[in-house]
Amino acid sequence: MSAELNRAFFALSDPTRRAIVRMLAQEDLQPSEIAETLKTTRPTMSRHLKVLREAGLIEEEGRPEDARGRVYRLQRGAVVEVRGWLEEVEAFWADQLDAFKVHAERTVRRRRP
Image (cartoon, rainbow, N blue to C red; front, top):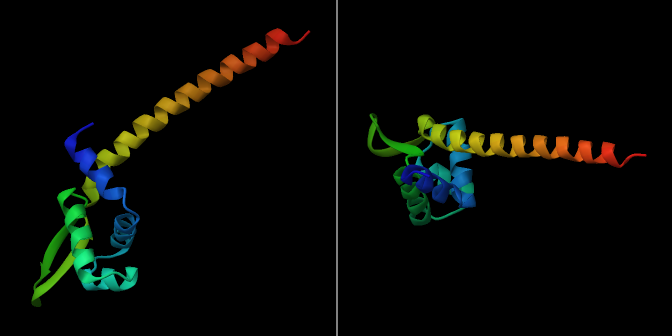
């Protein structure tokens, strides 16, 4: 597993950070908007956003009309590696379950009188 994938899974291991990702999948938001919705303090939100940013899951952009304002958005390409890993695991288990089903059906057929 790559270091990037490890950082992404670490970042997503926290329920608050998963909620942030869900929110940013809908729309770009300011940190204060996210903190207010999730009922958390701005310093706590800042730490969560830093983890997500360092994992490459979100990106920060300044607002042209307000130099102090920052907006966060989901880095859509970042979930590609996560999705790929999950699809590999899913395919492995699907193959294993299919093989088990075939084995179980053969065993049942052999035992019938």
